[in-house]
Amino acid sequence: MAPRGEAPEKLPTSRQHPAAGDDHLLAQYAAGDRESLEELFRRYRGVAYRVAYRLLGQEADALDAVQDGFLKAFTHLSAFQGRSSFKTWLLRVVSNSALDLGRQRGRREIRSLDGWTPTDQDTPFRMEDPGQGLERADMRLLIREALATLPEAQRQTFILHADGELSYREVAEALSISIGTVMSRLFYARQKLRVFLSRRIET
Image (cartoon, rainbow, N blue to C red; front, side):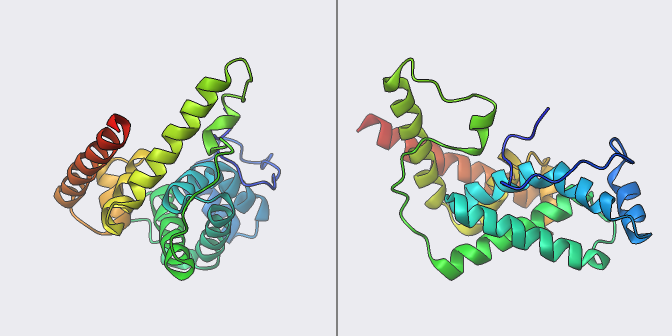
């Protein structure tokens, strides 16, 4: 299955290790096999983009964050000590890059209603019912606005779990916090999102 969100440049899939585990690919890269690095990028660029996009709300910023995150990860692979999965560690690096970029550029109000999101590749846009398209765009905008109201720690935790598809334990490993803290952040984040969305939808 193709990843939901992709960086615009497509890299070739490694023909040597199409089903190899991450640890094996890292070992092969350390031994000089650059195709292994390309395979890791292909494997995780989609989920990395979803996380960055949710944190930043802008396509261009998300792509910059993914590029910066992957660059940092692949130039500092020695920092990965195998205490968590490679995906967990990588999403921590990418999400931190996204948050850094957001702080540098400031939060910009999202005005675009073009309707494109990382998930649209799985459900191509159709013109049968323009009203439904507008409703989906409005809801996506509401979700972006709701996420922007969360404190940074809650927002990062929520997005790593919801969009990064990390378990509670993996989120805890990624952020170096306890599972209890993850559960607490997710609980309050969901409460705030629910209240925000219910008020906006009602009005």
